[in-house]
Amino acid sequence: MKKKLEVIKKTAQELLKKMGIEAEVEVRKNKEDEVIQVQLNSEEDNALLVGFHGNNLAAFQLILGIIVANKLGEWNRLVVDIDGYRQRRQAQLEEMARRALEQVGANNQPVTITGLTSWERRTIHLFLKDEKGIETYSEGEGRNRQLVISPNA
Image (cartoon, rainbow, N blue to C red):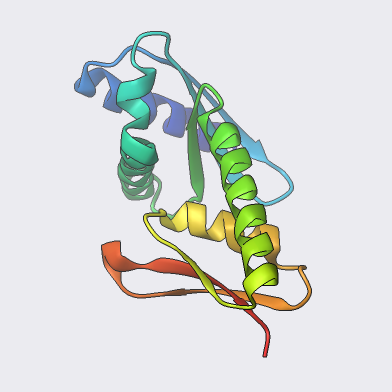
């Protein structure tokens, strides 16, 4: 495992260098869910690495995952974060889910949330999974994929 984490760290550093971005890289395994967390710390390039709604961060995570899979010969679930962006975004998503839940309860009509990444949709699905009287599902394809929070029939 230690060798795997070193390969991931070195690969992330090489990729950042090729992008012309200076950032510290920390890699650790989350024992709870077997996810390998890659933490980036950059004072100057935060906004560039995060991108619009985290799109650059998601792209970096995907590319890093593919390169690492090719090097190690196996897929590893990587989650890349920079300076706590994902935690802040998760809090925003949970608040968005609460407001949508209130709206569903008040109107007894489904609420659709568009423009979310797969990680963001998953975050809301997991946040609302134990709520009584509602269901969540995703519909649509590609960029048109959206999350629906609907009252149970």
